[in-house]
Every structure is written in structure tokens, then in C-alpha cells.
Length: 593
Figure 1 (cartoon, helix red, strand yellow):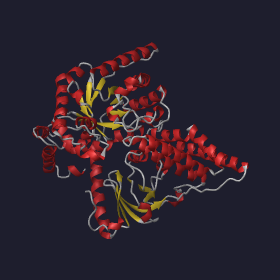
Figure 2 (cartoon, one colour):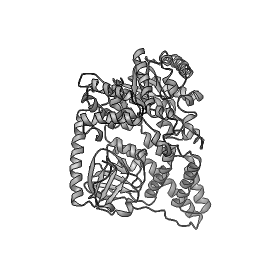
Figure 3 (cartoon, one colour):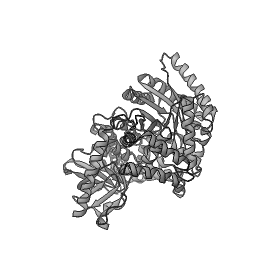
Figure 4 (cartoon, rainbow, N blue to C red):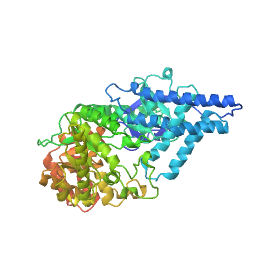
């Protein structure tokens, strides 16, 4: 389903980015409207009083973000919060405080206007100095707007979402929504969230996903059309919003809601059943992890292990580099919580569109995907790398952990990393730290690594295929550039053949090979990967039940036959036709799950 039924009135339909798998019926709950009030300060006393007003608001907001975690479900990890730490680091940034206070004093203007000017300046610097492809920092520009809204609420002495105003099945509709505001929403009253701004990669979207709260974000123009208490339908799976639905529309979405909810309940209910094919071949389905907040959802959705723990967030969320103790606390918590299951910790994949603010925004107008990123970055910054490795090795004692390095293109990168690891282990042992045996793995994301499998295998214990970057580098395209997205072809013959080379080489050397890129999470591609010999797939938590179900409903012999046929094709389209035809014939509903 991509478009609403024809009987949905044209003016009532809106499209955004869906977060979730359900359909929600509710009544619109609008946030309090806040605007920047402007007024001059006529005396020195008034200026200093305004400075005090601003600093008090800052302290109140810091406490608000710190307290926000108490609203989260008790089974969520509340010891450390990447998302909330990012906002706290912004709120406590000395330059934010200093610049705003200086503006109040120099221009003799009120706190709201001074803060808007300060944040506007930060936004301008970011927009002028960040590459268009630097998606993460582009998202941080939107954080400035969220921060301003949060400040305005405190400065005006208002709650943007007063508890007394909620009603059963409220659907919050607002321009922006901070993670703290999302966490504080009364879950027994709020059925869903719609925001005019935002994207599926924003911090608020990630938290909504972890909390399993249906949302549609980036719904342009919705606030111009909606009023409080309007009836609304939110289709989180498709990213659709329907205002004031007519009878036929409501009936259609009631049936759709029932179907989606029943399917999701059945999928999640069976998620903890091991993934074995109908002819009894096991396939391990692991979960990808980026935020600590996602961990309960990853495990509740049936992950047999953490197959890819991305460690960049702690570096991107703060204006300073994390300390060894901060890293150790995070890794120790995750490894210990997942134990006795295994956690594969990928070392830093910084660079390209993920450069920490503490090291500068990076160079605009350069293709940083071909520059200093991932293991190249780490080897150029051995002090940063050693700090992370020390934290990983110390945390490994709390359970089962593996180390994996990304974007390897030469054997030398593995050898140099091994030397650093050896040195760090020696250091830690001298300090009395017991170092358990920890497997060392390599991500295969570059064609050069594919052609060096035998050599790499002599120095690695396992491999993981990162299909997103493998496709990007093989097809010579920037996957964030909309002008070449038509060349992002997972089923291109060269991609399928390279994946097969890696899987076969791993089997020959008796080295485990997993697939953790986007292909593993897609039912069309996952069946093909398993048929090609992949026995471990690592996917986002919300895709785990779907992929497990696909495996359990399939014969390995059938998937092998389809894969063999696809490997003989000469175009992406031919391979796609083969696998989709098989799926439609065997599982009519699988392409829509």
C-alpha cells in the first residue's frame, strides 16, 4: 500500500515519514502555541533581572531533561541516555550561556529574543560549514529549533502539553517535539504523534521507535489544516495522516488496523522461536543496536545476539570526546545486559557524514565517503582509538563480546589494529585487568576487501558484510545523493557475486560470515542471502520477527534454487523478478509485512 483509497477526500490526506507498524484512531491534541516576545530593557536593573531569568530557565530546562527518563518504561536502560545527554550537552554548553547573556546586556533585549539570535547564529554556522551530505549534523540544525521551543515554554511559564488537556486516544499534533517532551507524554492517554517538522533519523523519531509509539513526522502543512479535537487517523506503517475521515475511510482503516495488529501480534509472539527452515536448517537472526534505549526492544523482538553495535553516537552526541570511563560504563551495561548472548562491537565508523563536533564539522565540498573514515580515521587518531579499545576490552569481562573493525581495504589496516590491540591488552594486564579471549572481526564493505578474503582470513576470526557501503563503493555512487539513487542496485550482478565470494570464502576457511547491511532486513533480499549461504543476518529490531518468519516458512532447498537462478542473471531487474515471483507464489503477504 502506498496511496490511500480513492474515497479518501483529497484535502484530508497528508503524507510524512511513518514510525511504527500500526494504525491509530484518535482526536487531535494541539501543543500550546509559543512565540518569541520582543521588548526592550530600559534600565540596568531590568537587564540583570533578564539575565537571571534566562539562567534560571536554563537550570530548569537541564533539570527537565534529567528528569525526563523517569517517564520511560521501567524495562528501558535509564543509566545512560545518548539522546538526553546530547540535549544536556547543548544546554550546558558555556558558549550558549555566554553568548545569550552578552546579547541581553549589549543589545538590552529580552531573553527570548537574545536566545533566538544565539541559536540562529549557531544554525547559520552549521548550515554554511557542513557538507550537504553530512546528514547527522544537518539533523542537529533542527535540534536548535527544538531547543528554542523548550526554552520558550520555560520562559513563558507554560507547559506545551498540559496534562489536564489530554483525553483518551489523544494524537499529539505539533511543529516540533523534543525527546524529553516525547518521553513525558502520558502513555495511557496518547495514542500517537504527528509533527510538522522532523525526519525518521531525528532523535525524537529514534526514541518514538524505541518506545513503540506510533508517529508520522515531517507532515508539511498539517498545522494550517487542523484544529483541536478533530478526528484523525494515523497510519504509522505508511506515513499517512487523514483528518476528519468520512465513514468509508474509517471503515477501511478499521479493517486495515485489525489486519496489521493481528499480523504484528502473531509475528512478535513467534519472534522468540528459533529461525529454522522447514527442512530444519538454522539461520541466526541478530539485532542491530545504535542507542542503549533500543536494547529492550531488540531483545523483546527476538534477537539471538547483538550482531552490530554501532558505537558512534556517544561521540556525535556531545561537544567533547567521551572518556574511557564513560565508554566503559556504556559497553559494560550493554554486554552485561545481553549476556549470555553475544555482542559484536563495531569500532568507530566516524568520518563521511559522521564527524564529531569535538573534532570540527569536517570539510564541505569533498566526498568524505572516499576520505578519512572508519578504520582509517581510527588509525590516524590512535589516542582516540586506544581509549575505545581499552573500554571495550575492560567491558568484555561482563559477558561475551567481539570486536569488529569497519571499512577495511588493506591487510595493513588489520595488522596495525592488531598491534594496537596487543599493546592495549598488555597495558591493561599490567594494571591488573583480566582480559578474556575476544574474537576479532572485519567488515567487508569495499571491493578491495572482497578480493583479499583469503589473506584477510589469516588475521580475522569472523567477517560481516556491510551491504550498504559495499553497494555504494562498488557502484561508484554517493547513496545520499538523490541524483544517483537509481543506481543503488542491491541485486546488480556484481553485488550478488561479491557477496557470494565472501560467503564461500568464509565457509572454506571455517570463518563465520554474517550480513548486517540493509539487504539483510529486506524480505526480498534476505531470502536470497540465505539461499546464497548466509547463516547469520543482523537487522534492526523491528525487522527481526519478519525475517525470522520468512526463514521458518521457507525450505532451504527452495531459497538455494532461487539464489542460484538469480546469480546467473545479468541485470538487477532480472534478479528482482526471479526473487519477487517466488515470494509472491509462496508467501502472498510477505512483501507487505
